[in-house]
Length: 215
Image 1: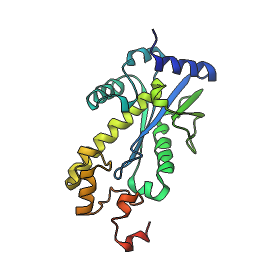
Image 2: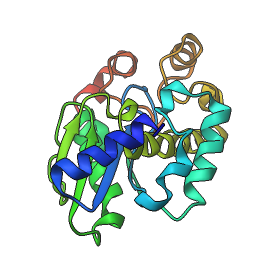
Image 3: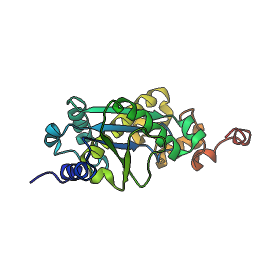
Image 4: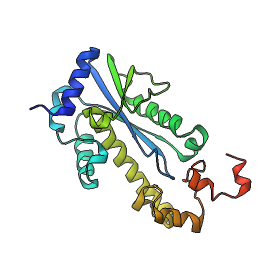
């Protein structure tokens, strides 16, 4: 029996009559710190069956995600990763920064012609140079989007591990920037660092009044 996610992609390719189906997903919209990271991923149809274990990054353990990341990135797929920094999130808002990360991720795939991008979620990506269609819960339906979700998530987690070494007081490697009790306690004790998103309410509440005028 064919993998359900792969069958979805093959049906979409037929319905839209496209040769190259690209999955685009992001990781890190909700955290209080760090970048939002997007991945654009194309899996050649002739090798797609070997990724039967790939699923939505939220549905697999951290250990399995790491293994799937290695499988994907060491295979002859085409993918790009894009970041939007905490400062860009504050400047643009999280949705527009997510679109920025997606556009950056897609740059590596622009040589592909006769392509369609599947965007995880309800929104089209503003300014994307590839024809696109949004797919709600795409990371649970499409193999290409699920693969993009794995690569984006592991890439971001590893980046947060590097930030942990730069700002050890916040334990970024433990919570990846999400608003856990320990993270909030560290924020109250030490205040925000440059990687915190100043427009997010729990961080903004801790800023000196003078800094609010710069947001």
